[in-house]
Image (cartoon, rainbow, N blue to C red; front, side):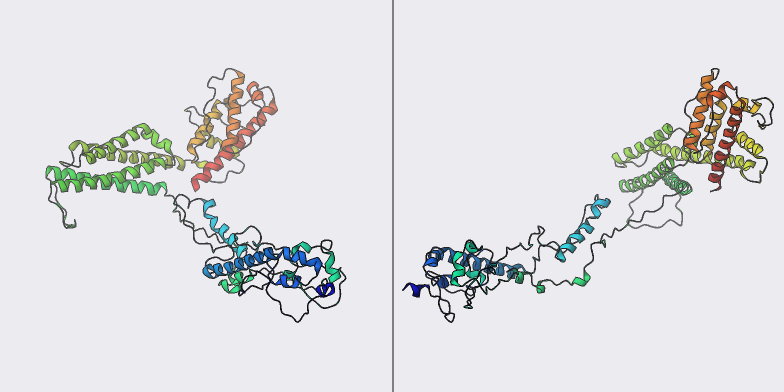
Amino acid sequence: MAATQNHPPSPDLSPTLALGACPELSRCVSTASSLSHGSATEESSRDSLGSELNNTSSSRHSSGSYHSRRSDASHISRRSTHSADSKTRRRGYMRPQATDFAASARSRESVMSLGSIAHLQYYFARTGLLDGKGAQLARKKQPKATLDLSALDGSADGTRLSASDIDSSYASMDGSPDLASQGFATNMTESPVKDNDDDYYDEDSFTESESGMLPPTVSTYHHRETPIPRPPTIVELKAELETSLRDAQKALREAEARKVGSYLASPDDPLLPNMPEENTQGWYELQGMHILDVVTLAIRAAKMYYTAHEQPDRLDSIKSEKQVRSDLLAVMEVLKQMAIRGFRGGMKDDDIKTMMSWTESVFDILKKEEEIESAEKAERASWTWMEGDWSGRELVRESAFLASMDPDAEALPEWTPAADAETLPTPFLSTMQNGLRLVKLHNAAVNKSKRRFGAIPSFHADTQKPYRCADNLRYWVKAAELRFEVVLSVDALGVAYGTDRQIWLNFEAAILKWCRYVREEITNELKK
């Protein structure tokens, strides 16, 4: 009887359901799953294993059937879920869509580059490089579902068991001592290593072609550069200001003439339909809005011209900035009061007078500026040192340059070479010894150049002490380095005391070098 119980069943017999198993489902017998540790079919095969395995199989009966049903139910649930949203959920990524940023964020390079980041995410997810890297629908790594029993010696009865028929408690040789003796250790069938959800990611769900996929080194960030118009020149700003002032004066004269009844309409004026009758509230509102528009444009043009002027010191010499601002605020206050009262009764005489006086004052500033420019052009025409061949007459050229830059009324002494003089300093070097004349020449050259910066703000006017002379010379040397980018080597204290001949020679060489650098810069600026 014992021998009969230990004898294995015939391979020709078909497996039957275990006691208490569920009714047959469409996928009741399936391949191994990561959640199942047994199935309903393995109970019938284990019932014939003998007395050693009989108790074990009966204890696993309920758990095996439960895990098998749960595995099959979960797989069916995944299949049904996939059929419902296979068109929308694809392997944990979505094709990047165009991002609409706020107006304030479109001007930031870091925000607009997010389009390129979305492309990289799409690329790595689409090519499968993100599988198993934490993506939402990435495939989970499955443990190996087969048993390595090749080292066990078993009987060659040709009986085979699938991986689902082997309990996980016999995953090692030490835990299953009876398998080899019963002849179930050889010719085991390996379970497929593919994921059970491969059909979820079938290739039919991907409509995109891999040929159109760009590599991650190709940026999809196409920044649409906003065309920025070039800034207007000072000549264009001046022309716009004059045009706006003329339009404002024309509108103001017309309003004044209509007020006194002496306005004569031009035959070229267009006839506008639906115009209200003259000297009515509707007429006053239209007239006031027109005045408001043209005067506001004139104020804007004046502001642009003042702020963008290349030589604001020239405008300040004509009219101070404080006075200019005061006139502008007065005109704006008049416009404000006109709008507050709703243009009732038309324009007042004081309002017209205030705005007309402002436009005339601006025209006066432009006229005086033209006079200053004409004087500067005449002065530059007399600068003979700008052009010509001065070979062998370098000191004469630099002397002419210093004479044109010198703001003092007292003329400079003749510049004679110090090397040919028997006693030093020469009259020219004696004039430059205290550094005061050099500081004034430096500031004058800065004011005559187009780049008006780097002037020496403070210096010693009283140079009776030698250290003050040395300080002025140091100011001049440092200002030349910062403003004109010329490095000079001067022993300031030695020049102040004037005891060494070589110090005087070096001082003359420094003055000559400074003159050459400054003259070349001013010449290049004026020729542009």
